[in-house]
Length: 255
Image 1: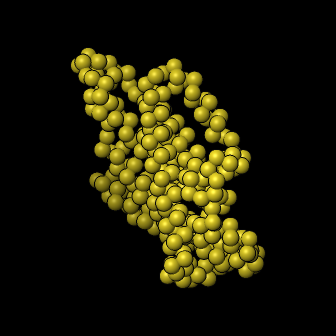
Image 2: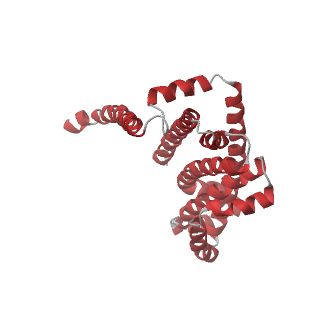
Image 3: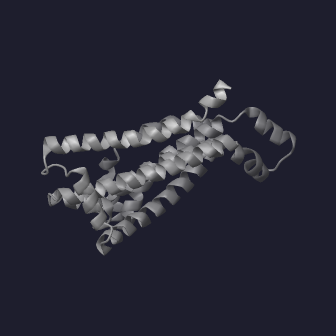
C-alpha cells in the first residue's frame, strides 16, 4: 500500500524539479549579467526578446537551413560508418580488441588541430562542415556499437549456430534486437557530438550557418546576436536530447 502511494509521487517530483532547474539557471544567468554587464552578456529577458525577433527574419532561417543540411549529412554518414564498423569489429573479436584502444586514443586528439587538413582536402563550404561533423560523431558510435556486440551473451550466437541460421538471419533476428538499445545510446551521443562538430566547422570553414553567426557576432562584438544564437542552439539541443533519451529508455524497457 505504501509503495503504491509512493509511486505517483515520483513523476510529480520530477515535474517540479525541471522548472526549479530552469529557474536556477535563469538566476545564474541574471547574476552573470549583473556582474559582467552588457558588454559581455545580455540579460535573459533581452536575449529571449532578441531571439524571438530573429525567428521572424528570413536571413536567420537560411542560416538554420544551412546548419540543418550539413548536420543531416554528417549524422547519416557518421551513423552508417559507426554502426557498420562497430558490428564488424565486434564480430571479429581480434580486430576489435586491437582497434578499440586505437579509436579511443584517436578520439582524445583535439579535432580543431585537423582544421588545416580538412580545409586543404574539402575547401570552404558544405563538404568541410560535413567532414567536421563526421569526425566528431563517428568514433563514439563505433565504440558504443563495438561494446554492445562484445557484451553479447555467447549463448545467443551458439543458439543461432545450433539452429543453423544464416548470417543474415543471425544479424536480423538475434544480433540486431540484442544490441539495438546500446547502439541507440551510441547514436544519441553521436547526435550531440556531430552537431558540435558541424557548429565548429561553420566557425572555421563556412560563411553561413549557426556557427558562422556565433563567430560573426563575436567578431563584430554583437553580444545580443551571439547570446541569442547560443541560446537557440542550446535549447534545441536540449529538447532533441530529451526526446532521444526518452526513446532510449522506452527501447530498453521494451527489450
